[in-house]
Image (cartoon, rainbow, N blue to C red; front, side):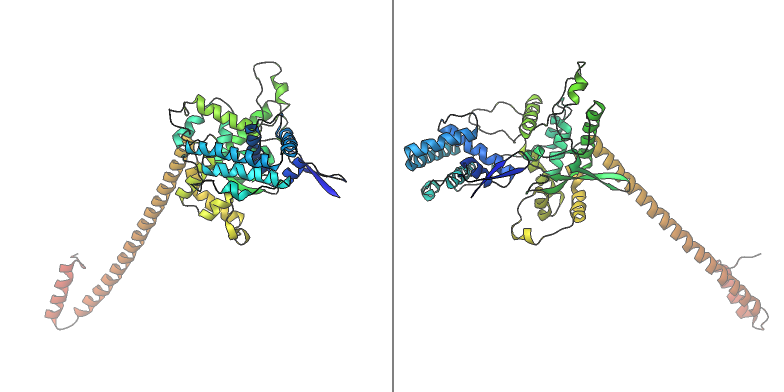
Length: 431
């Protein structure tokens, strides 16, 4: 009996029958992570498009691919693969993509062929692939560039950018984020940060944190939606479409939210980057912009955390990166991760006003601490002076008694010497 698996947006539906499962379902079955699943499909579709296969979806193109394979044989697949790899290697030479991108294309195609039982001598394909660096030659945006991006006139931009920059979540995470996945963290009755549940109810579920300013931006966005007539609860999508508030039906549209998919969030950020003058047409010979539109925020998070001194292994945990064998042994508590995060949150904050308020608070705290120390030292000096005064009074009394006793003696010369010494030192004064 075969098992046929079909994947929905968030859930897996399993059906049983006695026929051979379709290839596309097997291919999706082999991709456990929702993020990996999305990336692999896009890369595979690039290969199908390169071959000029017909179809409106990647699944339809995969069926055309299999029909052609049955007709022309496995040698056609090998030749097509080789041509696709050579095409992309030429792009590497022109610095349009990296060698790692080529290998990622191959991973997706190889998985599909393996699930389709298409025998390919993969060593012949991989032998010619580059071993160069597996990272792009780009940078992270500066804080001034991010602030410029936030000036874009869309209510959602602050909440999106603040959340991604302060947590390092991937673009695909927005496909699962609901209001209930954002949980404020308070200390002394004040929100200091918020916990964010990423890929909730999926195999890849993990948690990270967002900054205080990110939480308040999201809260303001949800309040605006609530004031506009949308029913907001913990199941409300964190990001949704906008509605036209200039028409009478504006409130009506507000009550029918449509989730803003990751692709929509990416387009929004890209539009903002171009509109704010942060991206211009590439000069001749250049193939890459200075920083990527979306993934640069994830890189910005890691860079700032490293600079601020967070433990590297904790950064990887919050990014949901593999930490090797430590995955099985390293078990920090949520509070330990939070304390490490709070130490670097100032460097993750973007808003100038928040930054000034933090500096003012730090100044007030430092001033209060210094005032407390000064008062403590003055009190200590006062106590020392009082102690010395008491000692002096006690000594003076004793000396007076001593002089009084000596005055009764017959050795007047000795008395005069002692008295002269006491008057000279200031211990006694003439009455």
